[in-house]
Structures are given as C-alpha cells and as structure tokens.
Image (tube, rainbow, N blue to C red; front, top):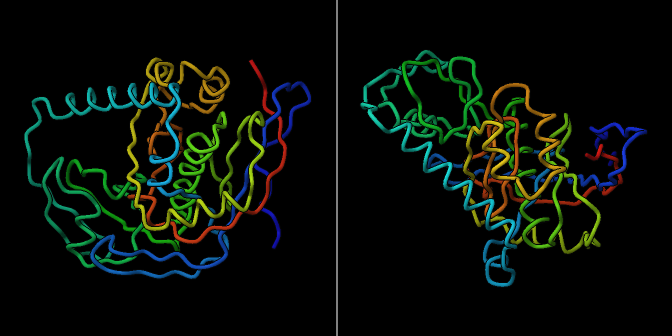
Length: 292
C-alpha cells in the first residue's frame, strides 16, 4: 500500500524537529447504534486511532499540564453555555431535508442526529445546515435546510479522519507522554505531529491500544475560542500556540476535548470515537516545523 502524501513542507530555516505520524485503516467501518440503526461501509483509506479509556484511567495519571488544560477548557465551556442559555427562549422551527421532507424541531434542543433518527436516515456521520458544515450533536438554531452526509461523501470521510486525529493526540499525550504540536487531515488520511523527546513509540503497542478502544465511545466536546482564550488553554506550550496562530484565519478557532487531551480541528467531528473500529499504523517520518 502506498503511503499518504506528506501534508507538510520542510522549511530550510526551521529548527524544531518533529515526527509526522500517519495511520491507515484498510478494512471496514461499522456504524452501530448511532440512530438506532446500523450502517456498514467498505473502506480502503480510513485513518483513525483510539485507546481504551479504562486502560488510560486505571494505569496512567494525566500530567499536571493536561489537567490544567482540561480545567480551563471546561471553565470556558461552562461560561459559553451560560451565555447561550441566558435569556434564550425555546421556539419551534422546521427542517427541510434533501429529499423534500419537512421535520419539526425546537431551538437549542433538536440536533441533526435527532432529525436523522426521526427521519430513519442511516449512516449519517456529519451534515450541512444551510450549506454550513455541522456536527450531528450540535443543536439547530432556526428554520433550515439539512443535508445528512455519510462516508460516501468527502465531508463524511473528512469527519472520520478529523476524529481519528483527535484521538491520536490523546493517545500520544496521555499514554506516551509526548508533547503534541498539531494534528490534522490530508486528502487521504490523518497526521499527528509531535516532538520526538520521550517518544520511542512501539507501533505494535499503538495498534493494540487502538484496537482496545473500539467500543469505548469517547465523547468529543468542542468550543469556538478567540485568541485570548486559546492562550489560556495552551499557555504551557509556546510552539503549539504559534502553530495555532498560523492556522487561524478568523477571530476564532475550533478547539476540542477528547478524553483529557485538548487540541485544534478545522471542521466537524463524529459524535463519538466508538465509530472508529479497526486501525493499522502506516508510517512514522520526520518533519521540520518553524520554532519561535
């Protein structure tokens, strides 16, 4: 099997050497119980990574830095939740599906996942709301057109790979004590960049941890944070802050929580990591990132 193309270009004036971690799945993705149904897709290039929550929590303590990031993240999430619900009244609205059917919903309560379940649509991984990419568990806000997307779409594949990248970061930070730089997706899969210190990784062990995670269904939380809030979350990692600054094209960036790892993603995620089932390590290669 050919390796995915590298998504990073080495820069001659760089000084920080990182490792570029690529993973690939060559079997099947089973979607079980998402909407009370079951979907099955044949997959040749899915990249994902996971780890047993029980293994992590019973054998390894989160570092003080990770614990502090989670504390700040949850504090910001609580604050944003209070701002959203303050003075907000629940109102009825209508949702028009791609097949022309119309469903009813309630602001702040009804999600695309609920609509998909009520409409008996199976295999949805992500969706578009009035053309905007949207997560299945993110509440709808008003009258809208809803397009439910499965793995047979580019958006669905990208959601799978982004979710895999989220879990890779958690595994590397939580279990192997690696300093993360960034994670993301390419056209053919995912990558995860990390500093090489203390990272004599066993590929076989990574794969085994990944297999143990199949049924854990870790939830994924997301927040839109501005620059000041991002600095609060990643105040202990100057390189990561620099890379996030380079990634930001607007006033905010999407930050997620997977387990007790906090990272950045550039689009919607799956409802949980339990949708990623079979995993295989593909390649580890060196890259160079610009240092501060």
